[in-house]
Length: 192
Image (tube, rainbow, N blue to C red; front, side, top):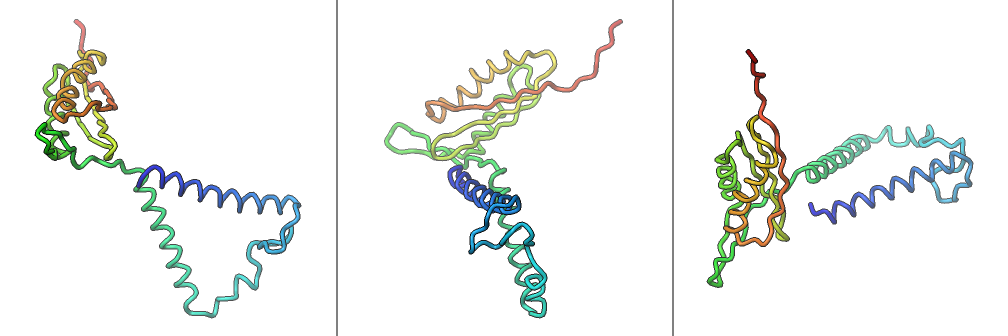
């Protein structure tokens, strides 16, 4: 789901909730209610006795209510998963220089970058993920460093090594990267 669609849906949902909640609050505090509004004054309840029991004898009522609520819950869960999930880049189009292009699989590039980063001095483990869309590729790198390596040196070798090689191989002008560095757990050394 694109950021624009997500922002529009969140804005609409927010405006509806603010309008409903604000109007109920205003009427509850004594503001006059319009004639078409659901509530007519401070003492009015959300559902009176007649409204609560109007459809009780209808056999179709409760299955419809449960089905509608289930659909709403499923749509909310789908939206949450779409927002939380980060899109991985399936492929990158590489200019081969002969007027044609080649498609490079995103997983292959991730694997090659991770292998090169794992070979760097002081890197215990590396994970690489390509994200982004047609507008441009982005890289997320997670490096687990050995205790003797400084983060500045590891970041410099990553930038001049694996990231530079990936940028050159794909022909991308830029390859924005988010790098997270973690130190490898180690047991304390005994001093004698």
